[in-house]
Length: 286
Image (cartoon, rainbow, N blue to C red; front, side, top):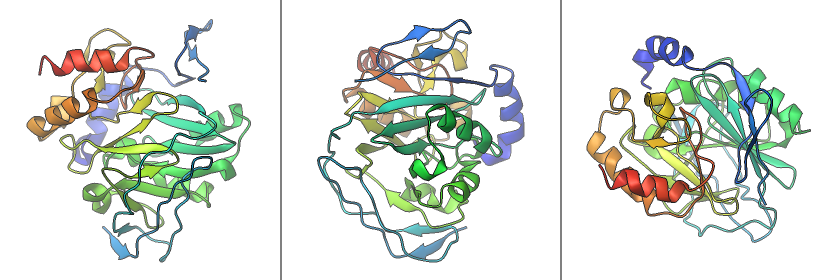
């Protein structure tokens, strides 16, 4: 959602959900409270960190430059590597918006950070996973809207070893206490393939995790219940906050050509299974 609409959009979305923490993956079961728990098998230019991969370890870029908001050149293109430990995803339900945490081999990546003040929620989920902030080594922002990057500064301040990433076109609009790495098509972070999905914003990205068959789509698509539909189904990008719908629809079709089982949305209940098929069916109607 765009910065000028934060207050209105926050109040609108907030009425649609309550603060809760739920965990999603490839197999799901509801607990007594309805939560779903699953287990899976401006900008300153600085020099670009490198992004490398290996078959058994996570992607670990190095950083350089002052501790201030910044942009960097895109890292070298790499092919996605499936980690030895497939890992486990957890949803941080912040009411009208969600963040997600991926943990594998005791290391964590956070995808989106919610609105300002969401750090405590993210920390509570880390605690439930028997982890602290020191385990967070990667923070990926799907796009510049403040309900997705609002707590980036808090997260990075608490996780001093973490590196931040975002799409190049969105970097100038993201507030960060230290430089972020620009990522794009073909790049990989922590075993996650970066999928450029512009339209909702120019630099919007999704992340695909081949190891767990998960795509974290940000706002490139929407949970149907966030648009007045059925929970666990998929809807297109929200036209109220997507300035370039033609490009956004092409991004939907691009994602529909990928293989994944689970879909995580910025807004709405995740699709726990059959994600590729559901998105392909949606794309055929656009």
